[in-house]
Length: 437
Ligand code: ASP
Image (cartoon, rainbow, N blue to C red; front, side):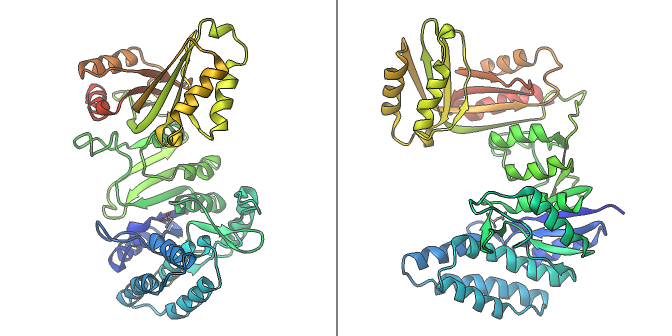
């Protein structure tokens, strides 16, 4: 028999109704042996996520404000789930411990982690599975770095002892035993870590959409779903803003070559998107997806004979590094180099930055383009086909879009264009229409 790890996100465990759907999904396939859960998320638009409320308690405490009201909202939500599902778990005792720890100065990580902890306790009883706490099994070093090999060993040994289990997502522990969380949305990472440690055949990631779509449905009307894509294509798409899966989550599954299947708890019959190492080239589909983000600044530096000046790129990057600014792309020509940075990271220091670049590099000129967007057209089938760029740029010209920057990664599975924010939506629609039939 195969072994599946199923991770359920916040919306899949938001209340008793959603937890019942989750239970039905797990029971429908005996191979779903290890379950990883998030904290209850939003039940409707405008609702609160438990994790946000937990952080809010901590903020109140840090500012010497009464936190009891927010804490009560959290307790009430968990109690309602327990009563709704007819469970016995002693939540009152858990709330007391949390309260005491809160008042004794527990860290934000500890407090935030309690959402996943309680969620897992509840679902373990509901399913009749063992509850395994990830503290002590998913481990970090004293500097907060995740220890992948040690975790894999410890967790693997523990999982072997249990036929079926539920584990809380989002956190592990530091060498001193205190709780340490991953970044927000980190239960996806836990799911991948558990998949690797359990040697799973598939990592199922259950959420509230039926996988990836070829473009953002807020921009393109009814975009086609992506049935399968490679880890690499996923990296490119999520980097550029397609946000279904926590980016880091790919890594542990990828290392162990475990396919990731994104599924929809509200439509379990949909096959979702399958992510594997295989780069599948579809005969009738040149591209896999389109993703993009707004909010970039492009600084174009021109200097005659730049190509023969040693160390100039190092100096450009050094200055940006001094400002703590990350470079997203670095397209270059013979006498030009452009740096693409997020406008947010510049944080009001643009004039100063340009002045420093000017003083240090002595360029002929520097042009700055603010309010830029980047759009990535991704597909492993692009490299082996002729006319892909021609089609892309014809589509953009047809939509009257002025392309300011072009960057094609050496993998040739991604063409990135820089355009003005105002052309963002029109560009995505034009590319989609040109490539997707
Ligand atoms: N509950 C955490 C968050 O909201 C982690 C997760 O759901 O993945 O970020």
